[in-house]
Image (cartoon, rainbow, N blue to C red; front, side, top):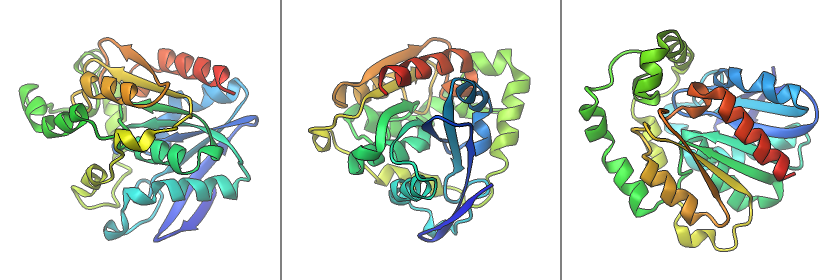
Length: 261
């Protein structure tokens, strides 16, 4: 699969299928392999599905000191340029939102639609700030969320699907390139609501009611702050909607992409 040299990193990415391009940007507990429930579905529906490992994750090499979420949009642009993709839809999970929303802001001509799953994408509202500040308290309230999947999966899913939770941890174990705490740098890359004046990229926000990382309140404020955004809520679902509820996730995203060609 292709690799690409970018600023202070080597990016790994994959391309599957032909047709309309859609890029999947994973979260901090994942990598390109995390989208195993999505790629066959979207390829079968005529899409050209592009996955990648964020810098410092999986097979994308990056020193810890060079892990900078501010570089994410440029990393994406390099992949699009390398594949000759002029315009693509972006589907972003958690940390991947720091790729998607800034990319849609800085190069809107390259982004046809944006899906933010369990992520504010760097948007900073009072509710998002409160969500960041309360993560430790919510995790402690849930008994420390020990066991497979941890805080990345909802309690309902962990209890009903221990094998799936185990698989989630196995995929996450591929990420060994960064020092602990490096991902916390995302909190320093912020988009203020006022920065979104004139923002016109069609946007879908997905929220799980059991998400202890980015609360439903935080993601509701995200959708309210992005002009024209639509919010879809998932009951009995945690932070990783794409993993916990792949059938409904795939269908909603497919309908959204078809409605915004």
